[in-house]
Amino acid sequence: MLFTNSTVFPGASFDKLWLAFHDFERLFSGRFPGYKGCDTTYHDVQHTLDMTLAVARLVAGYERSVEPRDRLGAQRAQMAIVTALFHDSGYIRHNERDAEFANGAEFTLQHVSRSADFLRRYLPELGMARDVAVSSMIVHFTGYEVDLDDGQVANLITAGYLAVQLPAETEPASIDDTVDDEDTNEDDKGNRTSRKR
Image (cartoon, rainbow, N blue to C red; front, side, top):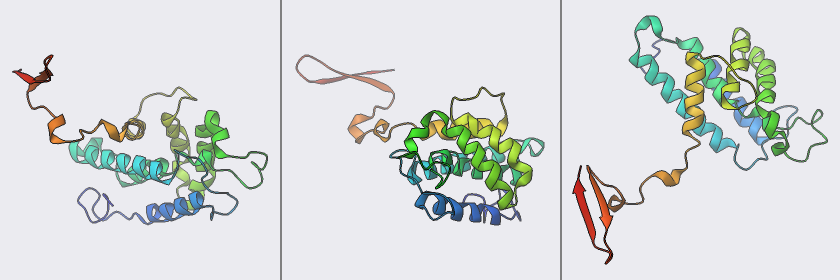
């Protein structure tokens, strides 16, 4: 993990973060008490881990690039990662409350509010009760249900979420598909021509 065994947060304990990853795996696999597990195609384990990694990298980079007085600190960084980890928990169906729904995708229009509700219930169990208000608010930066004011952690969450929305196909397929400091075109006969910029 980016935060442990590093200079970003020396001496800070991230035991709650490890427990959150354990509970995330249980929630998405259907082994978390009261929940069915993930049954959506895109908002799954891989998407969530991609988003969480993006947020962790952004948080670590932010911490390294700002003055000490502007840093988030270990507690806020941990809250950002846990929020990212459960940002799509609203797609997971509850055994009793959601019995009439056939698939988590049916919650698309309200899944972010549902994720905020999950965080309100889960964070106190994790020992992070003081983070409930902020976490359940900034999770809305991953959706469009609520307009929110700006904030450092919220911006990092949003950037991580948007970064993983980019398709993998945007990467060049080969070195021939990239151009260094020049524009390349093909003429009528298929010959490649280039012009230095």
